[in-house]
Image (cartoon, rainbow over all chains, first blue to last red; front, top):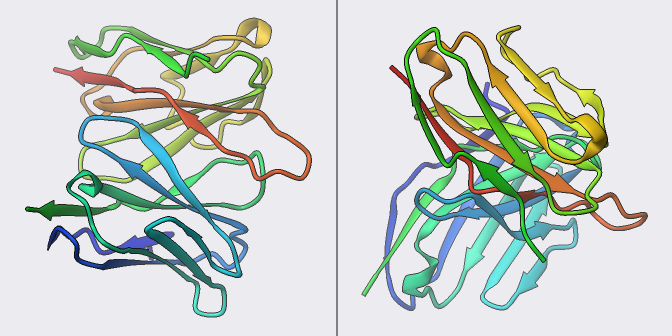
Length: 110
Length: 116
């Protein structure tokens, strides 16, 4: 079983739509969770950390469910510029390597 | 402030040759990580330096890969001799541990390596 499972997509959504991605992880010792965004042929960039209580950053909302071992990302009012691959990432503690999922591709169309 | 830089951006070499990748982390960052993405796979960890010391090299695929970080500043990753399966994108990331703050790793643009 892979450490991180994500639906690869692609998710093709119209501008203004709400889209949600889920990600499951297999190792219950995982401590820190993140969503990274990666544009085509670019490096991954941190979109947001995911906290147990859930957190929101503008149009983006992240949730963590430790009992079921999944995290989610909700994007509201999708923009064309949101088109990218969204990577589910965790680490076991601070200053340790990141473990990546393969990513979910999102295309927002006009 | 300059971000993480990597050189070269692309490298095409023949099987059996040697290639050296370089990473310059964000100034002052003690942590330096190497990752690799092979086509069709997820990004995978290779190696972690804290300053000049190798903290974790459990992700290094085999002894054809040698990483160094002399002086705790920039790092090099040498592949010798290169094999076809070494093709992929090699990312470097750096971070600075701060007490009570979740670590953020900042990635460089990557080096695209193609072994023919």
